[in-house]
Amino acid sequence: MTLTPEGAASFAELVTSELGEGVASTDPDLIQKCSSDWSRMSPILQEKLPPGRYPADLVVRPTTPEQVPTFLRLAYDRDVPVVPRGAGTGNYGQATPFTGGAVLDLRALDKVTEIGDGFVTAQAGAKLTVIDAAVRDAGHDLWMFPSTKGSTIGGFIAGGSAGTGTVERGTTADGFVTAMTIAPCDGSGRSFRVEGADTIPYIHTYGVTGIATELTVRTDPARHWVAVYAAFADYGRAIAVHRSLPDLAVLPRLASLDEPGLVATLPAPIELDATRTSLRMILEVSTVEEVSRRVVAAGGEVVAVFDDYAATDKLSSMSYNHPVYFLQQSGYPCFHLEVGGTALWDAPDLIRTVYPNAMVHVELRTMGPLGMYVADYESEDQVLGGFAALEELGVGIHSPHQWMVDRHVAEALAISPITDPKGLLNQLKLDRDGVVPARIDTRNEALVARTPVH
Ligand SMILES: Cc1cc2nc3c(=O)[nH]c(=O)nc-3n(C[C@H](O)[C@H](O)[C@H](O)COP(=O)(O)OP(=O)(O)OC[C@H]3O[C@@H](n4cnc5c(N)ncnc54)[C@H](O)[C@@H]3O)c2cc1C
Image (cartoon, rainbow, N blue to C red):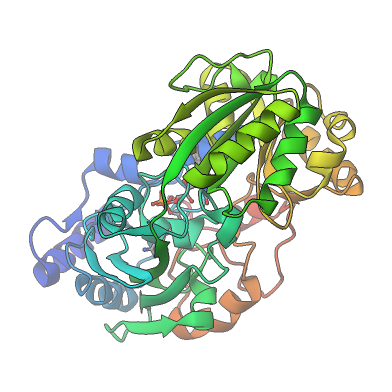
């Protein structure tokens, strides 16, 4: 329930007295900054969740993992809603404090605590850039990281799903996470550890089942990665190379493909030809020659090869949602859908007919491509109205235009009555009536309308 200004001040005082000076703040500027995320990438969510519409009442910034369960005990005792937050780059509005309360900003928990053989353990607020640099120094590769590499490991596991490394290692729910320390909101003031399959209720469930304070994720022995840029006169030839890559002796770390309409706004280190389809790959060094041969055989051109790790990061920062983001930055009024299925390779002309000026950005996975479908934006009805036609053509859709937990819902519903019996964690993201939210969730508004007025 939203706090009164007096209630917020009194709760901030309580948090300060238990956890120390500087941990709790009611500063309006800080509250404003911490109360919205990157949902602005969706024109639909931009309208529904403009900055300032759903402010928290205070921001709490723990400096040690132990402070998190203590804070949650206080929130539990006072019935204060809590929304966890990493870097706030989640783009579904899933960190919006609809019912006020406290935003729990975890970025000060930023330590990499252990690097071992095949794993790294880090506090939830550690940035993936920092974790990756640490594991590379120790001779390892993170299994995966998102194109928003400055985001936090806790936010990636609780709110993201895939990225550089997904070609070989799948999503965040495919064995990447081996252990998590979870602080529940059950009045206990204690944390517990989950391992293996027991981590699933905490993956991509937006913190509704508990707050991750420390996470252990898998690494591989470090490889020598090279950034390769190729260009093709037509999409079909680029696709022929893209879909051939899973048979390489060592899988690529990333293979991103954009048709010309998405190329002009990519901030590449070289000038990309915006009349050609761009294929950008992070390849293991021993496979560069073979892939270059395939590019040329398909009528394409290798336009640049950068043999340093920083260049592979640059290439990664143009993957997944980023081409859409760069197009939007140029002022183009578009929307996007997260899509998957071999139709992206097989029937691009057909799937482009569903929405006006549609374009595709494609990422490689061994089990088939996934990517972003981008088109001109008119209205929410227009966006929702095309889903069935795309699915009919074999395109799987994950909508980035709604904030409800839509993966591991059954697992979250099973565990949250134990870990969050009062339902204070990230309210209105999990439908506790037990109905698995439809992908097109028209109940978003209804749920928010039920919340107390500020
Ligand atoms: C341009 C762009 C590109 C992107 N590319 C990718 C990509 O390649 N792959 C991908 O998967 N995602 C991508 N994303 C989405 C997002 O950036 C990532 O998932 C990111 O890793 C989220 O981390 P964060 O620290 O910003 O989390 P936040 O946005 O702060 O939080 C994400 C969710 O997790 C919850 N949460 C945060 N920390 C914790 C915690 N410690 N315990 C429990 N719950 C917590 C929050 O309440 C929220 O619901 C992209 C987004 C944008 C805008």
